[in-house]
Length: 71
Image (cartoon, rainbow, N blue to C red; front, side, top):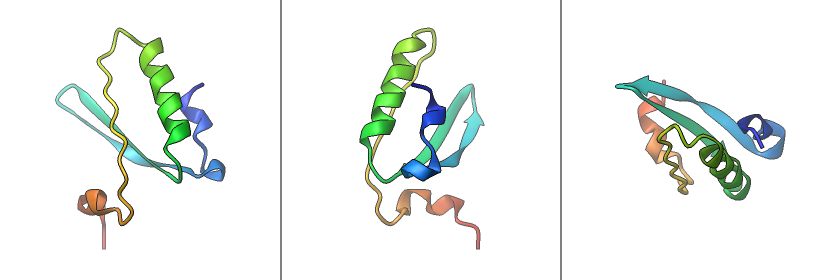
């Protein structure tokens, strides 16, 4: 189940990514956490050669992404 299955029509939005210091952070916003959790769990299992961590949290008002807000 590739990350491409997380489509906007299913309630998932790719926000963007940051790359620095040999690390990449990828951001998604989703209406529900279940499908992204399954997709990324499978990606982690299929790629043991990479150190991958996953954080899923609720941020109803997008306060965590305020640094990316461009007025």
